[in-house]
Amino acid sequence: MELLHPSLFFLFCFIILLAGGAFGGNRGVRPVPPEKGVFPLDHMHLCDQEKKEYINCLKSSGHNSEKCRHLSKLYLECRMEKNLMAKQDMSELGFGRESDT
Image: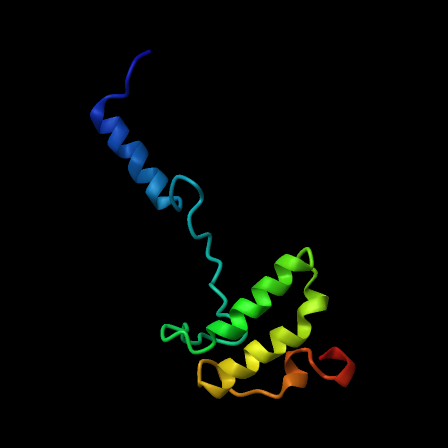
């Protein structure tokens, strides 16, 4: 197999870069920010207990999140209380009815 002349190889690489990279690159699609924006990670482990209870519930229920909704709500409430996410009405987060909790 014959290799490309170095100048042709350089030209080929340059054309690939201009075309958006070897795998298509960014084709002009603008990134969309997350719906809720960014919020800090729980570096101080302020809501670890709530998180662990939720994860344990998921594991024991075969990852059926419906059975663990009440723990999900407690975790989100903890994050809001500790200013790890913006305070928001729970109905806006899918906990509108009392039967949901």
